[in-house]
Image: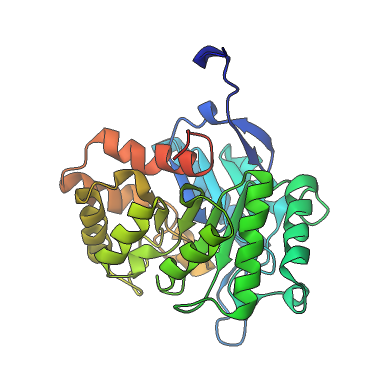
Length: 318
């Protein structure tokens, strides 16, 4: 019988190649953007372009030096301005590992390839990309996300893209991280993904810190899904005081293993050099408040390192 000493170590697929999970010694940001293009007539600032990359490099390098930041999960997927080569450059310059995503965002941002494609075709697109690399670069994604829906129930195109995400996850072993609009629609996403056969512990339901409904949080966590408390610092959507209250309620209900914490930096105005709170707001502001509320360092490590590694498939069943 094969004992623990002979088990194969789980490996993460980063933009610079395979990374043993044991090499991730510091915190992980499981829902961020480093290269993004969601700009449009109604939101011209929703982007992180090449001109912003020096500021991003300086910011991540400083977080690595000060807090030991080890890994960023970059959830810009197909149709969101994803740039795998830029991610690889940022990773090499900062020494911070980066995981790229694949899949499709909410239907308002679907690229033309989604229209008219059935679930089987969409699944094949994802499996090919996961196997061969993103956009002809050979850089393999390590997560499916952020796979989106916009309302309480997914639209017909979102049903197809989310179902394809689940089927591709089953075929490749990757987890699925979702986008919900202001936290709404998580139960419907979970029901759809699990109906396709994907176990709940391989699913993270995004932006739950924007939904002031602890009962829904308990429902998702009890089912076995992860919950993204991943817009930390976005006070214009919800105050961090509310996020902290919701997180404490989840912890007090016994679901410390289900929470993932991140900042979802999704426009250049959020960068510290442009006057924003930046990727480090979690470490500099929110975690000190969590510690003041009674969290010890074991819990902080669980929330910021062990939980995301487990979600990514590197820390056991979940």
